[in-house]
Image (cartoon, rainbow, N blue to C red; front, side, top):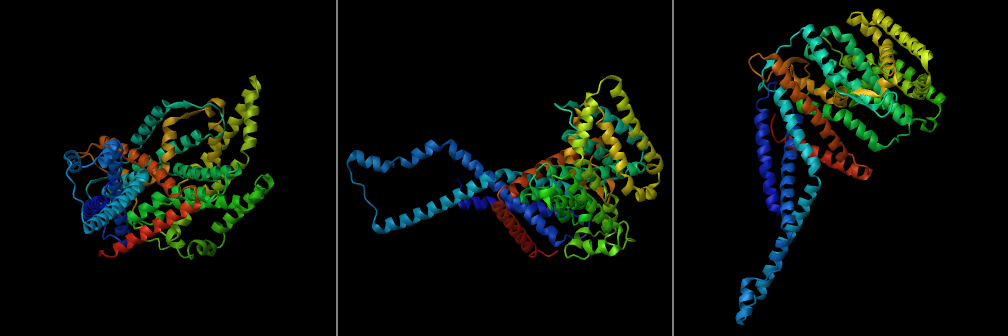
Length: 561
């Protein structure tokens, strides 16, 4: 294993190179001055990159030592040539004086201590090599993101509004997705693969809506967002009802997954948390479900008690959003530290003086649908029984029953389209909180209509449905370009010069999807490393992380803004 001096020199060299690259990248910054938090973040990322290099060196030395361990052992036990020569000739070998012996002993002790410490340090780094590799890759991705959105290295292009292109591309994607049909071993209702597929195709249209400025599908996008929130209520209620424990680790990992990327973006780019409103909205409703199921959890086996909980939750939500305005503002606008999370200052709409307007509007649109998801999860067993009975029917009776169900669902969907969906944007938003459950219910009925449909899913959409958080946030900064701090993605990222629109679209989209998938994987690795099973170990790691952040911030104070 390398010595302490060698490891220290390696780390300092890696840190200097990382800092030089960071300074060079920061010098290209196009939007004002860096904040103290951004400088602290940059220092922390440089430390991570340098420590990863150190771990790789330590691992290389450890592998090299183990490969030639037998030769090393032989070399340490073989007598010196002087001793051999003296033994053969019979000459006496002079022994060192007592002073020389003391000096040699002290020197050997210091070398032994340094080697021992170096070995322990190297072994500790090698043990953490996997999360350090993930951290280093994360740093590179963040550097690419910063380069794309906060510098003028890549030119910006205008969005092209063309409904024909939008729908033609969407049709091509659907045809490709149909070629990736996979079959499951069962035909359960709402399998994980089916919900991932659902998230995937909705997310794709949501992203294309932004990229192509296809404002005509706004009402549909609102339904898709409601469907995501529906799944938040459904999924969490379902897990806790099935006996998932209310452990600190599971809750912490869930919150980490929802907020890690958004938190990093806010620090790195000096954006407000509400720019990525999906993160706080899903976090709030997830915590609401957790609270509902945690209180009186001994009675969660009773349907009646759960219905009482759901009704009380509905009334509480109604009071929070539709009651006196002082209630909403008292909770989200006065508690120290909370207002900063939910306030938003839109540079494109300076006329909005109310800091909480965006949060009230965004979360208020879907304030009830997560409760509807809980109701669906509560009565999933009855739905499974009904589906099983329908499947057991034979002949004309089954066809008649299926036709009746399909006709009822389609009729409800058609009525919703005519009376609600066709409204203009503002009128639709007023109706959306109270009607979004209709298209979601119709979709679920038709998607699970037969065993053949339930047992199959589109792999392409299901794959993309696993990285919806990353694709949602990265669309701002890699796929498109924002207008600056707290800015919206009003421009397209152009990496292929010469006006080759579709070639640029393919190249940027491939990089964007790749980085989204990688960041999702890295988040999982870091989540498991920072939140282990043992609560004591978890506490120590987070205490160390907070100390590290404090050191980075203190070092940032040494550099003027």
